[in-house]
Image (tube, rainbow, N blue to C red; front, side):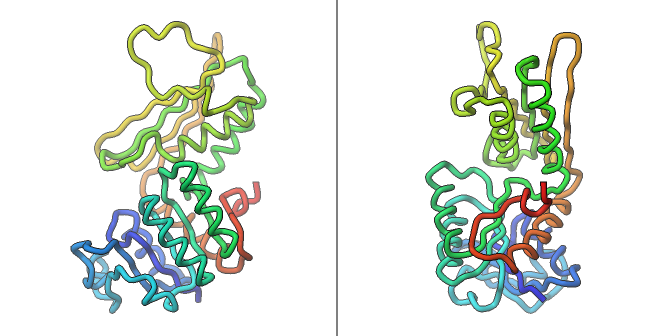
Length: 266
């Protein structure tokens, strides 16, 4: 059995992960972490997750429990993820990271940690959305500059970063396929008299509202027709199942940086 810890265990994704691990035949939930000062520190993780007592308390002390897990799954915030990554790198513990919102410096710091331990990183753990990215790449290469490209994403009202990490990753895939520079060609907002659309633009539109789990659409708009590739998540369980598949990969992997392409073989 692979022993798995969850960082951000009291959050929406954390609770879903604990339930999924608990249902797994090959993984064992062994520790749950939250930031210092969290009101549920010391509470039973199972009770926090609505599952009944598991006999494990929510903790803020990763160092104290470093020997209680083999791999940790982290869906938190960049600063917390980096702190945990440094601990895991020093102790050779694997990580599965679903955190989004990293800047370039933070992402490089995470890559540095991957020199010492196996770290799997994906802004979206859904198998379906990563297959969609593969289709998006194929479409972009086939259609090229004959179409205008827009990325539309929608999430729940509690999401704190925009555009989503998945939308940014889609933008990177599009830029690579089209031979463009995302930092120069991305447009994240339009207002007022904007002038005609630059054909090199990769546009982003963001929607926040209600309890939308996650929706991403890439619009390839040509003259006379348009192609849309859409992925809609109906629950967080699909993200959890992808993360659990990543745990299995990481548990047997050498130090290094891994992503969904390694997991899916695409």
